[in-house]
Image 1 (cartoon, helix red, strand yellow):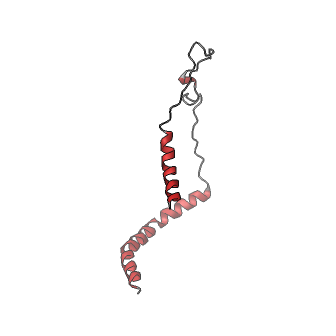
Image 2 (spheres, one colour):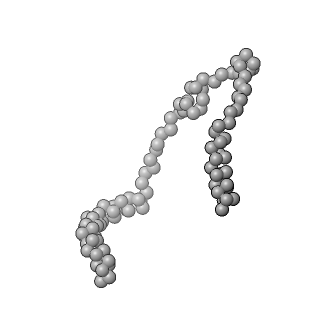
Length: 101
């Protein structure tokens, strides 16, 4: 039991004690660093605007797509009627299933 308690304390106190450590950070001054070519923010590819603008071109519909579109428009009143009847009867059917009938 005592060994298990020590493991628990060690697991929680160990990472917490790391935050109390101090570290020295050595940074070079501007005089010591060699002169590098600086890059402006707008020169970075992340911030630059693409030179050419892409244009979306929609392809013409095929005969199959046209046929499916006509079929959907033709069936829409019937499917909406079925959805309406289903939504009206769904609570009744669920209560019957709940009672095991």
